[in-house]
Image: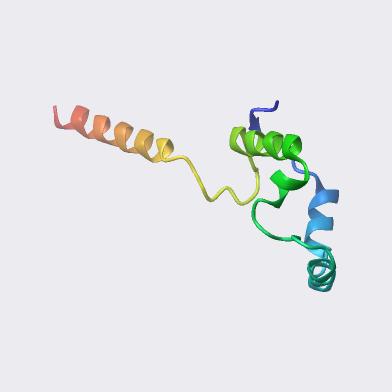
Length: 88
């Protein structure tokens, strides 16, 4: 199991961006349960469990909006310590 940042794949990224709304609409009308939450657990529980762990242990290089607050804490701590040293 991978831990850390995922290596981006331009091929898969392009495919995900160009799969059309019409294709999803057709699948939703034909396949029962397509696009519903939790259907992965019904269809293939082993793969769903793997994906859940994988998505929790790895991070994306792109769209990293759920950033770590520890960087902000570190910058604040360094700034406060420098101010403290200058005052003394």
